[in-house]
Length: 300
Image 1: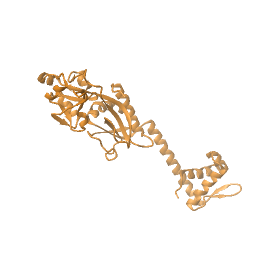
Image 2: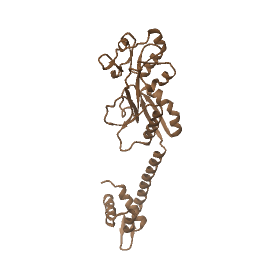
Image 3: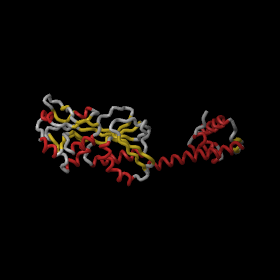
Image 4: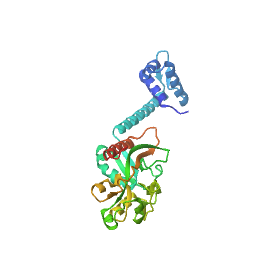
């Protein structure tokens, strides 16, 4: 049978207080509970730690030797608890974050300086994967996922949502004209995703009154690649606000079908493995990210 921390604490308290009665009061236990805990400890160790007389308790030689070890164990546990409490107040250590390249470049990277200033003891490791990864296999603490969640084994926290818009560069529109009706899109070079294909369903209603599914002329797994292609005048694209808002504000990309576009939004979630308590590193990053995303107008 294994020795418990409560049994060690009982033994040390009995020695320090000089009696089982005084130790019971100190531990807020009954005298019988304190005596039983001491008896269990001696039984597990198969030795007598204290000689009991009618007037006092005396440590045996084995008891003196074990007392030092018991104190060291208790001090070590208390020290670890104090360290964890300090980490909750001042998060530290390495935090591995994963996000698709567009979100990493357009949202997370601009926030790193501010986060590091607030939490200088956290070491950030930033990784980008376009698809869904296994957090445990990739040793990832928290991942940012865009779109509906499917994995129920993970904790998730909604960070915000980002609207989808159909866009093209002024250069492309000058060269090829601007489509006015959904049917006209078939005559244009459309930029789409090879995964997931659900992103090739654009937020505009077709003749069947359903959201329009496109047939891309150029495919990519990366939204950032499609953005760069659109900026280069290669074709028309449908992308999320979090990566194109500045392009639209500065005139590099122009929204098409503004009135006809449905309000379709991609949910943004932070996901991490289920634990009894979220680590302070993860909590600090997710809280900071949620606060920043809210200020960007990506509503929750």
